[in-house]
Image 1: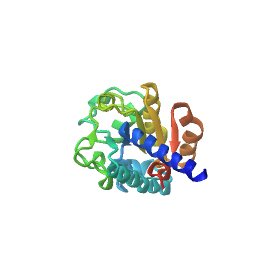
Image 2: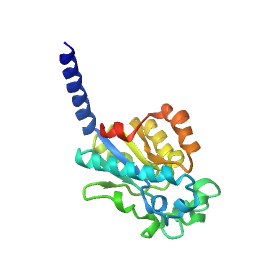
Image 3: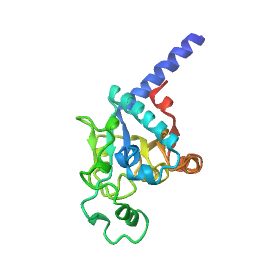
Length: 216
């Protein structure tokens, strides 16, 4: 009896996993040099907990490898601004003011390039048009996901309490089932990271670990 139950559970998990995989996408948010390279402007200026960030890089590499091997849709959501930041013209506060001042994510320059170990491969979708904190703002992300019948989103990247959280909230409002992979994201410090995980995520989705994502 016990053996039969275990077999049924195993088959059911595989079935659900297969169904989920076909309607799922791994969303990499700002996996770019500004955050991940030691010479990146944001890495140097904002990242206080370097150990947490380095751990997140290792885990992003793991989940990306798993997604590629298991034919899960992969979407790269970066930021790139034209010279002079016309997309953010006249920003008086928030990121619209901070980004041009810091001169981050300039198009076709080092900071905006995808980090070497997680850069897009042929066949992986690279979002264009994004101009805000959410990966959906001004971009072709939503239309791509809907046209490809994606329902479940797995978020990794930076920063947890800014653009990852903004994308999580936006995805919820648009009707997606959204999961934040907690140890494949990083905030500036541990307090910010823990606050998002304990006080924010459950309102808009769920969080899981890298091990849970890759079924270790």
